Length: 406
Image 1 (cartoon, rainbow, N blue to C red):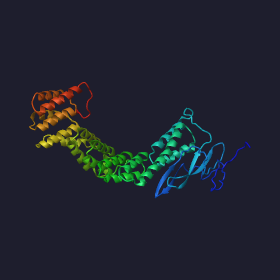
Image 2 (tube, rainbow, N blue to C red):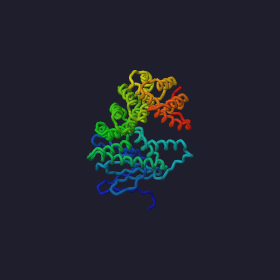
Image 3 (cartoon, one colour):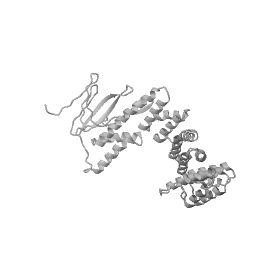
């Protein structure tokens, strides 16, 4: 009566399961903790946690008791009303691994648990879950990681269903695809849905899709690069232009060069670094140019342009240098000379603004601004504003990274 027993739970339509000893080798034991089913030609993973499951009505449970553990097999219904078999493995006893006794094992267990959250690929995620289940340790970090993996699969399935419903309007599917890309950055359905928004007439939708594609899915191809260049040129939202410049920096010069878009990207950055109306955007573009290795070429171009006969081109050169910074003291002395000698008031005003934007506290700069403040007109007013700002910043010894380089 008190001896070892074998219990089988079954539903009316299922045959009595065979009892198998736990130490017998069987191809059905531990084949995987992550199975896949084919739906519309795609393999969709079904993850389950590796903790022992209680028998429920309508499930088939096969139990083989020994000193080592048990194996359970249960049928579950998928969201597509397709029945798949999912294997759970666990130990009958709640084994907790002591970090002090087995530090190397503990470190490996912790690495596996952490890798579930951000797997490098779907295969790696599968292997991590399988390994944790086979070890059978029930440390809190393992339990939490496995439960999160199960919840993640359920969330992915729900988002895929919502995406397949095809709700009317453009915003809801975009939000769904964006969420799906954050939950599963390897999801092909999210990628395909987001790519369709790159042709949308609303540039705000395009930017949201580009951020998910480049930032989450890591899709760094010609399509996304062209999309970012288009945003930089045409978006009316200055935050989106800053983001576009930042994502170009994320893609990197090597990939841009492989796509054959290096000249186009350089041309757009060179144009926007003086034509954008906001200094914060121009400085972001200057940082992107530096990250992509294009800053030296721009410096050479705009430093020569300071001596151009055209007033418009000299103004453009000053605006660009205000975003790029000054490479040599020689250029600073040249700008100070231009403030005194240039016939164009617009050029002189932009040079004064450059001194202020680069936070140049050089004594020669302050002396020149004080002289110009004594005059009349627009240049005197700009010099007075610049002096006030620079004097307020004198107490702060921090130097702007875009300032003059020795």
